[in-house]
Image (cartoon, rainbow, N blue to C red; front, top):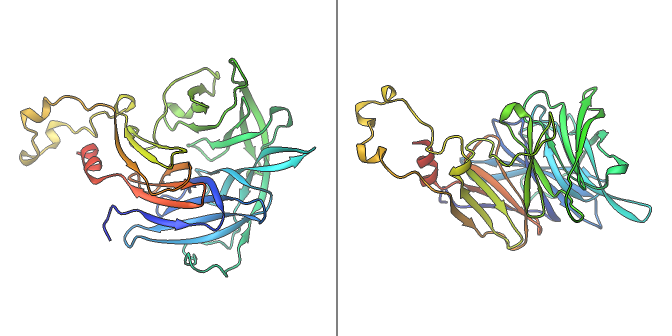
Length: 331
């Protein structure tokens, strides 16, 4: 099998929620949440063996409802948050909660994807992140640094900053802000920037991307990738995943720079290489392994050159950044 060939894993149910297990930096691991109206929903823990291109999995039961968003704690491998549907007064609301995986679920004890007879494990509820006056919750994003004690939830047009206390068993609302503008604006997704001392959050509502400073809730306009921030992934309703090289927002627009003193004679760059025109923003690759709307894309926490995408029909696809681009950024 070619090194750059995609690896595909199929879920039994429809799905649109995907996240890497952020606190796991040794293994390539993703969490996928399902959307089923008839059956108990599940969280699939997907392990990817990069050397042999093999996927293995474990399954957790998520019995409270369809999963619309999932995110993993950056500090504790066993903790995650989900946004899910529930019915109240004949209305469907999307709520949020923080969960802990069962202690007996140890890494390395995964079944093969074909083994459907193995029993699923149940999640332990730690706390809810609901605020009745703020509407449905679109997503929960964790502060990328620290002990995993702060999260932001996006509910309709509100940004809510929570402090998790008592080992995550209690959530206190620390501050909030509202998205203002014409029409009925609602958040669709967001991401906490790992830069700027973790004080800034990027959010999206329909076609607009905005930024927030958690110290003042002011607006900013830049969204970064967690490792090589010129690499930007998008998934869309046309079933495609697009990888772009956005050097205009990169903190390292010419790759990782080295001092001339650190280069050997063989590594000395030729004068014509030093005088090249700077690279421009561009679409690098379009991935078309999906047949349904791609609702989630995310990077591996263990390998910055590997990412996963999830379409609504339950197809998870793992891909890699093309080698040529990888070496161009590194060298």
